[in-house]
Length: 214
Ligand code: AP5
Ligand code: MG
Image (cartoon, rainbow, N blue to C red; front, side):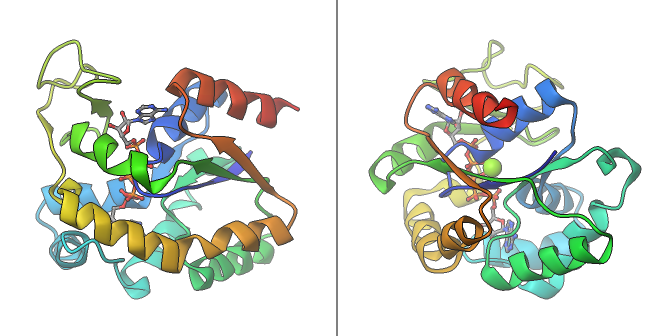
């Protein structure tokens, strides 16, 4: 099961990817989480990536593509994976397709979690993310039972630096320009499935499970 998650920033890609990973026992690979882990650990990559992320811009391909594609060769990916946040541009998607073709593989699904821009800014300002494990909460829709502390690993929950309203607007325009074209790209390949991401997160997941099990 090789899945790519598509959708605007804050559409719920990470939320759904984690639910899919838990149910179907495949790893959840988030390029954003990989960058945030590097930022937290103070690596050179983290320092470079943060300059772009804090402005709502995409991190350049030379810092992104090999990093994610190498991750797919790990042993835990042998039965599939869920890619969240990658690919994000047509060139990234083409590079991924070429890398898979080389080893005789291809993607099974591109799942688009569809949420209009109007809903996004409210969602993002309420999001809290764990600095330790990347778990995601929402102060209204999905609060941690431990307040500001992560239920999974006990680390601190924070508002992401790029979740300020003005940065969210920039991320949305970058999404429409550079990432939304992937919807047609995967539709042309016949693997695009769309779900209404405005519903309750469990209902969104039920719709996804129905697609994966059809
Ligand atoms: P990334 O981390 O991928 O961020 P993003 O795409 O902007 O998406 P988010 O993580 O913000 O949203 P999400 O869709 O995962 O939503 P979530 O489930 O958290 O990337 C960050 C940055 O890294 C980029 O801007 C870029 O700079 C860089 N980067 C990453 N990958 C790159 C690449 N391939 N190339 C270049 N640069 C790259 O949900 C959002 C909130 O809503 C949460 O609080 C959640 O609890 C809540 N929620 C979720 N579902 C529902 C629901 N159904 N109802 C109500 N609330 C909900
Ligand atoms: Mg995410």
